[in-house]
Length: 262
Ligand code: BGC
Image 1 (cartoon, protein in one colour):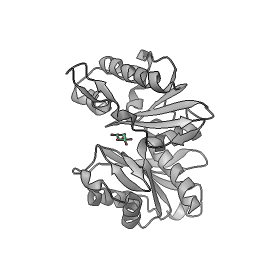
Image 2 (cartoon, rainbow, N blue to C red):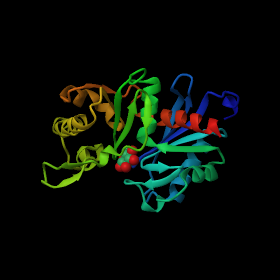
Image 3 (spheres, helix red, strand yellow):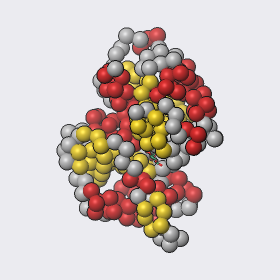
């Protein structure tokens, strides 16, 4: 990181997803990436060693030697993986911050990926200054949720795993099996057909939590124009202002807060 060494506003953010792992240098003063991000396919199987290889490759790519933050697609408690629905189950129980630190040589922090995207949107993006209940729903390989009350994160709300009836099969299953980006692709649904199911899911969330704003993030944000106008959930909705980079930016922002405390 030679040229960036003395800039304390810079951190490396890494967003681990079920299909891709993305990294970029984040300027926390601006809430934006510095330069291009890099994306590497998520290894299959996504074991701790294989993910460690990718973390190491991304760090080397940026010649990074400072602190880094990872967004992880599962439940994290005290930096340990408790749930990893879309990655290899050998990750369960792993101290992910320690793994990242060992494989990169950098001080590392880990947080849930949707919580990270939410922190970025609430700090710099579509949720900035918003009070009350705000949900940040990320649509990717899975469905993630960042839950905020008066700007404060309530972590690990796994609302992608709420049960819903699948209208195609009549079976009850996890919401993310019906409304994730992966489900849309696997079922070869048009955006219109998918939006109808996604809207049903958002209305379900609204009936229970009464958010004042729902921010939609994740990979699907690239196609926001195809589904946002079709949503009828009775509260304000917005696309993630930071798009799919929210996860990278938020992972870095969360790391700055937590590593700063140590
Ligand atoms: C995981 C969540 C994650 C979401 C998005 C879900 O399957 O359980 O922890 O935030 O996918 O990656």
